[in-house]
Length: 239
Image 1 (tube, one colour):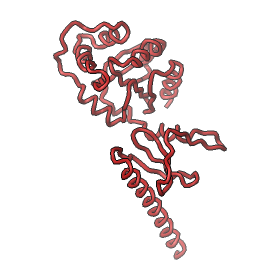
Image 2: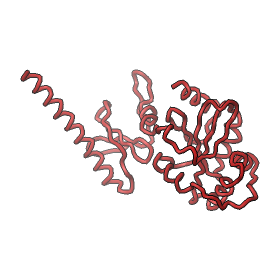
Image 3: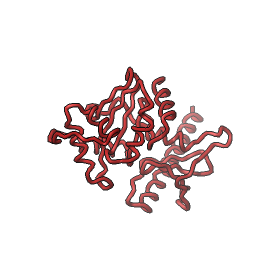
Image 4: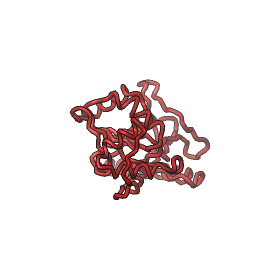
């Protein structure tokens, strides 16, 4: 019984020590980079490395912050797994079912059986490329587009978003604009959820457009090839 109590105490002490290490790394990183918020620090099983999740990306350091590895990939040499990629998938995953889809433009293609969310800026050239070159090749999907104008880059994007959202047929207005560069003629004087979508985007860590989310909560950045989007849609549909 005494041995069991000692084992439990030792395990508790080791856990507390690990948490203290992670907390000290978090404090050190935030002290060195006060403009950034560290979301999570996790000690890896690799050579004393700590995984630091901040700003939607993973960086690596040691417990004394003597170095930083940014934009690098940690790969397990035995399994050949991309550890960084798998951890990013996990850390950036969202609860798809909690998304306020009533604040998005809904477009149904084919039987609409699969689900896809896209955060899109109306004046973003990559968003247009995504719609014209990639999503145009995909069917049997329901696409929910959140209008997310990034005004620092596109000053008129908010006004165009209002015109599209306030159209009598939002789905058609969106398609006319994104595929044909045609805006609705009616004034955009209805209630538009741009502020709410902005809050949602920041909460979900959306820093650029287009950003895609699949039904399993995984995300994809940029105008990726439609075959890759198909692969992600099919994988999400199986879960």
